[in-house]
Length: 240
Image (cartoon, rainbow, N blue to C red; front, top):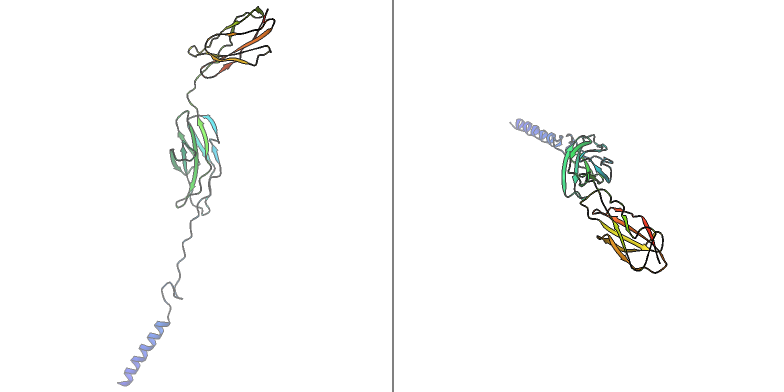
């Protein structure tokens, strides 16, 4: 009986020793395999070039085919692009924000408007820094305007001889019959006269004071509502 009990105790002892010295299936045991840590994601490279519209491009069609250079991803991930169009260069007043995997996108915008655009490359997890911001201006509705005709001389006649205070008289005209014409009058003893004696006149005459036995030169420039100016001819007269 004592021998049998001794054998049982011996077997239990060695079982405990073997179990305590054996490998563990846990993360810290020598006999287990540690899991591979996740590889951190790397964002794509930023879009390096905005191809069209180019910077400060003016009067383009309001249907715009945006184009930019492709970006690459260091991890080989699929790259998509977020195209943003705004009314300010801080890109806070957005009018369009679209995502595509292509490097072109056509958008229809308002005519006669200044816009700003930028593109950001991104993968499924991270975004690159935005590209630079370019401005462009869509073409507005065309408005035709014609410059006024050159002023016609009325009096005094060319090379006339006059005396005392002289009333300079001319007439103006414009193809745009609804335009209001104004006149700048230059007068003096040099040819051409450089001294403006009256500006923005609506009347077609102006009095000038003269001295005897002197040759004078005068010129009338005509302006319309838009500020378009037609430079007048130089006329002359002499006092007796």
